[in-house]
Image (cartoon, rainbow, N blue to C red; front, side, top):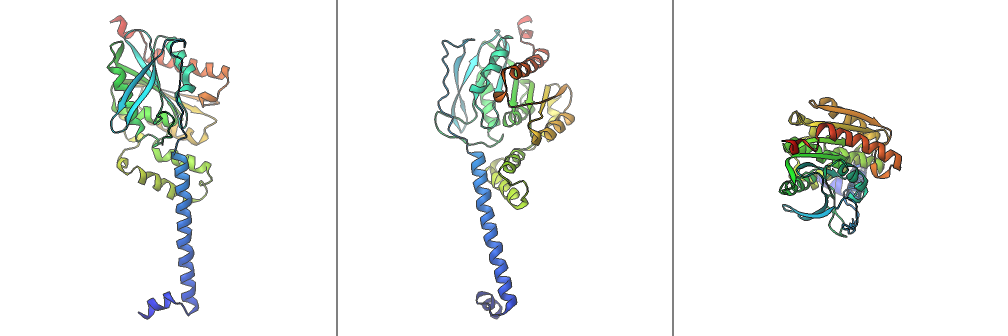
Length: 313
């Protein structure tokens, strides 16, 4: 009792020192938790997407609205660009804080080569803001989109291609590892685990040099997604991609994801390709850069997932 009393009302120098250190430690942890929580909130909350509109009647390629449902999440919609009857469908998976509207030129380039193409957004419904799980929930959304398209009578329901960058790349790879309908993927700046993307984005908020804040931010993100904690990293399931054509795109302007993209390429089974580009971020490219990028992606799919195979059978 005397010891407890001394720490409650310290009279000796050493007890005052210990109480002071404990108080500083406590308030440091509280402050660090608040900062880490704010950073995680800023990272995962997506700005309001707005109502993505497209004049379907006047837009080249005659796209149409396609609505589907994600179990436990709700209704989603996207734009379906029809290609050759019974051709495979390529789904374009937007990256972190990107939208389907930014990918329209790439969709048109693929449709020009007779592919069916589908554009959609992750967790964006009308004008309400959404939130990112960096692949945990997005895989479920992508699977629902593939299943909805597979029910159409005018597509090849057993051959799909996927393209994506960062969050979209992780999601595309994760689905390809578990869904045999996916026959080819082109992924740019892909990471191994969702928390890897949180770490990268956290470093942009200045957490990279502060180990405590970095650790708290990652743990906070995982706590928010506790139901998905048993999800294995992409690297643990790469053997499932044997026979799936893979194009790994490394972007020099995204140095934080070059290593993870290369490591996944090295560990992946054949068939696979790797390419280094001076710039990623398709939406931010100049017109000439976009055309070069489109040609590379289209060429990959033409060789690995030709649109006319089913039609010739």
